Image 1 (cartoon, rainbow, N blue to C red):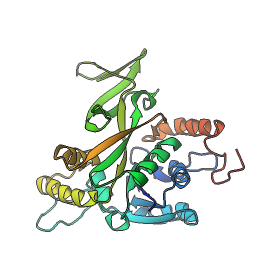
Image 2 (image 1 turned 180 degrees about the vertical axis):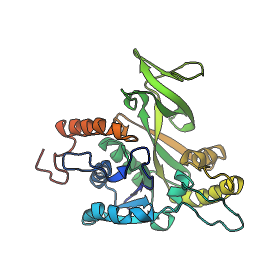
Image 3 (image 1 turned 90 degrees about the horizontal axis):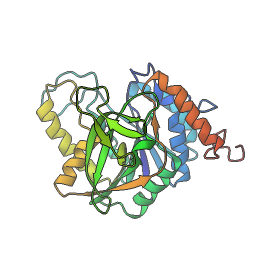
Length: 303
């Protein structure tokens, strides 16, 4: 059975100033997601599931339903305000986080699946790595995360926050340690730059999590239980969010699963602000120049 790619695309793009998930980055106005779909098709994925808000549906279908002749495409909808039996929940303006986003796709996915963000570029090689794992090794007790080399995820335009992976001797994940305000300072990668916290030094070759996961469908039941517990404790907090690393950490600590960190040399970039767009355009242009993608996606003869 071919694996599925779950693309989290329900963000409002408030910091970007628009629906960044479908904003054109490539030379023919291809959004970042389209490069992910292209890489998924070429790596053996059998289905794409988008998690979106209902109000995005028309825009997404107009852009992506054209690829249904190449790969199955489905849509799941993440609601902002959900009902949980026995719990009165305060009115919210944002959904319950990335774990909630994964959970809304449970009725569409019965096979091992990868999870990515819609507005992040992960590199073509990483899709082949995760597809191989999902096809041949993934189980209810063994799941995975693509680990990016820290210095391949830094910005030339300011500091970044990253989840630095602590792994054991066989590259299984122990925990993800959040580090903030990271930048390369004259060849030394430091964190807490410009903050009131003491400066720290990081290994530029350390693995970091960019929220690129390989899951077995059995995780849906665990997320459902975890989210219910989280909501019961945070029902009156309008901004509390249940993130994927929360459920992953809980399952590792409880001994329910092992998470293998699969290293990749691919560069990663994300688009958060409108000012990030020129960088993304340049990065895709370099990929095209290097022969990673044809100038016009889906046209294999044109480079």
